[in-house]
Amino acid sequence: MVAKQKRKIIVLLDTHALIHRSYHAIQGLTDPSGAPVGAVYGVASTIIKIVKDLKPDYILAAYDLPGPTHRHEVYKEYKATREKADDELVVQIQRSRDILHALSIPIYEAPGFEADDIIGTLTEQAKKEYDIIIASGDMDTLQLVEKNRVRVFTMKKGINDTILYDEEAVVR
Image 1: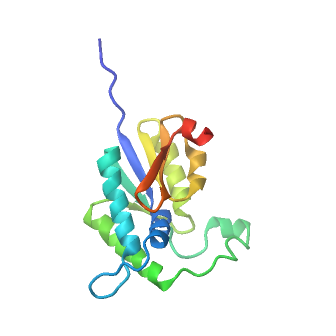
Image 2: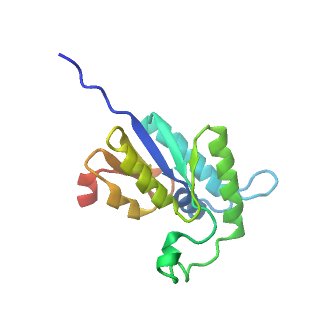
């Protein structure tokens, strides 16, 4: 009898969503020079929790790039009412990249596309061979959930209270 081989797990980080969630959850945390690091700490803590709890074989990160996306071409008012990001948040985006580089986590980004677009594409390409876990603070990612093959890991409150959504959990 041949044992069924366990599928490898890929975690896809919706890094911008994780940074935003962490930024709002952890206010006032600074490094010794006084620079804000709450969002950076939150992203690093989330990655550590993912490695410890989910034991992925691979982790990939997706980022938004500045500038308009294909959605702006289709709908000129896309995110027109969104406020400009706080400077304290913007500086932490680069620092989060430094953490990913230090951990050898590949970063995927493309001009004209948001991190969600990249995550959706990677999910479609990889789900036949791998189990996918999307780590995000954006509940829009739940539309990608498929049985136990594609799941979403997100924070319920703060950065430590988390949930892993499969199809059954989304329906509940």
